[in-house]
Amino acid sequence: MQKYWYLCTLEFKYILMMKILKQIALALLCCTIMFGVVDDVQAQNKKKKKSSTTQTTKKKKKSSKKAAPVAAPVAQDVELPYNCNDCLFAIPLQVDQPFGPTTAPDGGGRIQEIVADKNHPNLFEREHNSVWYKFTVPYNGELEIRITQKNQWDDYDFLVYKNTGAYFSNQVMLNKVLPVAVNLAMVDTNAIANELLKTTGKKSTSTTKKASEKEDELAFAATPEVKPHIGMLSEATDKMLTKKQLGSFIKSIPVRMGEEYYIVLDNCSNNGQGHTITVSVRADAYEPLVLFYDKKGKRYVDVDLMILEKGGQGERPVVKDAHYRGGKVKFVPGFNYTLYAKRDGYFSIYREFNARELMLRDTLMLYQMERTERGSTFQIKDIYFEDGEATLIDGYQDVLMNYVAMFRNHPDITFLVKGYVQSYGVNTESDMLLSLDRAKTVKEFFVENGIESDRITTSGMTKNEIKRAAAAALDDKGGGFSGIKVELIITGKKEVEK
Image (cartoon, rainbow, N blue to C red; front, side, top):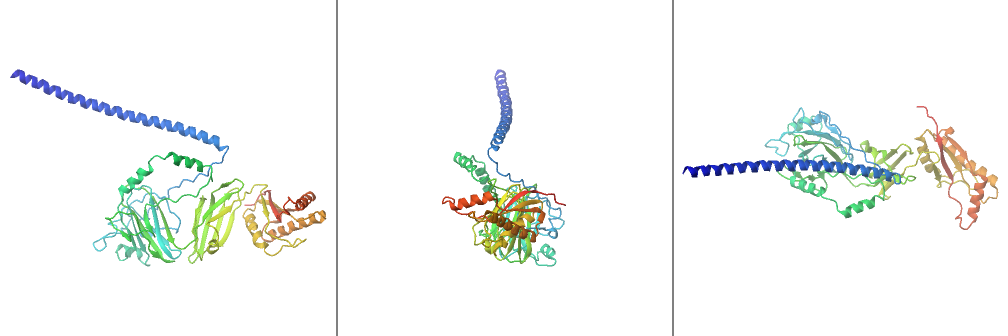
């Protein structure tokens, strides 16, 4: 019996020892795998660094042959004011202009304006991390709101209130004013997870091939709009989304010019991140693609752009962007607009127009950016002189005023006005004098409209130029006379007193 007990004890000790050895072996295996993964990640990082360095070197070599696209400026976070989580200090928004990306909302403010109760269940149970916005409707239409949070997992809710006048914030706090739009939907984690799986998938070789082919096309492309995660859209079907519902967008509401609205946006997630919000009013409008093109450099360029809308609510900026890279701009019929674009090394562009005039044109507003460098020329063909005289025929004012505005915005630039005539070379001396007189007539127009006389020199055609023009006109292959009436040539820059 003792022998049997001794054997059982030995067997138990053996089993226990084997379990301990297995645990030790398993622990060693886990450590090996873990260190192996770390080494593999480090090796991959080194490989990435090498490949990125190699690619950078290759790009530098290629850059000498082909101009690289203009790099999009990195958006800087807009810091939210510390008191913007109270209604009294709501942040004013410009319609059609994105606000953000912001820093993360922090706290519910000094006053809890939004508190749900039994009679009003479709409100925030309280403000967690809120921010208040306000805006004035510039024209009649349907209100649209687009909100894109940095972190899709953040649970954002929002309410929209119409301003009722005096003591508005107190009435909101007492639930005497109810929201006109409610979106309290929960985050659809399954939809986000599926979206993440799609975006992290490998690109097909055909897609890569197409992308490489497009590199040889325009070096510039309009900046794509950021896809909103939640908001209010005309095409949505839900009039309201409660706390128990999943969804992203609620249906737009009709708004009228001059009305003021408040949006309170609440991030229910702790340690959340910021967002971008865009408020717009959907209406019958003309939305062309606005681009700026350097013909000499054969590329699109970004500009410091300001577009002002003048209408029933006074003047408001539709676009205000120091690095505008192109995109669609909404122009509403019945409103006047002023466009001003500038960039170092180029002439500024100033235009005034009405939206109805634009609707008769194409869906593209393409502006030529003319360089201010010495030797740049501007050939004017669409003005006319009396036959054999230096007197301008009516209709020239609008044409020449465009150039007046161009040179007026650059008081340091000097230029030459060169006149042209259509001649068969019968009396070259007379034609030379006539071409000079026409140049002087154009100079007088510039001076009368605010361009300093000492910035402008004049010249006419030379005897040889007249002879060559006459020979070309008489030659059947010459194609007739040139259509140039006057040519403006940049001659340099002068010092301007500041």
